Length: 209
Image 1: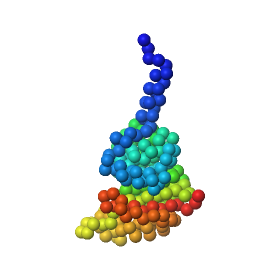
Image 2: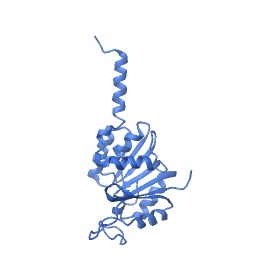
Image 3: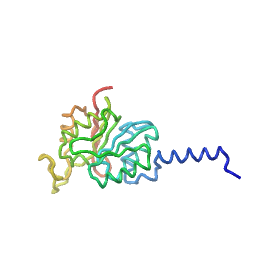
Image 4: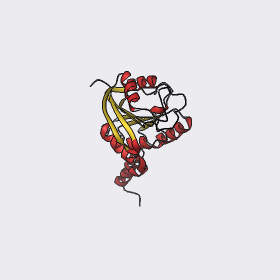
């Protein structure tokens, strides 16, 4: 006897959703708290369009994709070709993720595409922060939010290669982030100093609606 039509339809729907929505088990526990906080502060919901800048292996990309669902979109960017390949593989398994090659001076995101953008432990690696900040500004919708998660430079550490001379260790002082991002046109919204792993998070908004 064949499978009833109604059951077959349910199985098809389930398979489609599995290709679009991420299960909680796929988000590593170490990233879960950051993902929950980003969801709250950046107002992620079904249908949101989000960008993860310098996404690495895509742990937070997965978390965002779970929240925005099949009607949303997560742009996941990387300058490193090996990491980009991993993100592209992730995108083939999740229809709401788009992997993009980022440039040193620009995000390569479509103009005014995102409701929110975030970067985790990426800012202190930027060799052209002013240009990247300007590109982030262009990629956000009016009123869109930017979250920069980074760390104060630990004593005795060396700055990342090629970064501006005002970096004093492997990290970036919070004040420098605020000054540089505001210079690109953003408004400061909130400073959060108790982020997981002794990091900080600074929230900015693009002026507009």
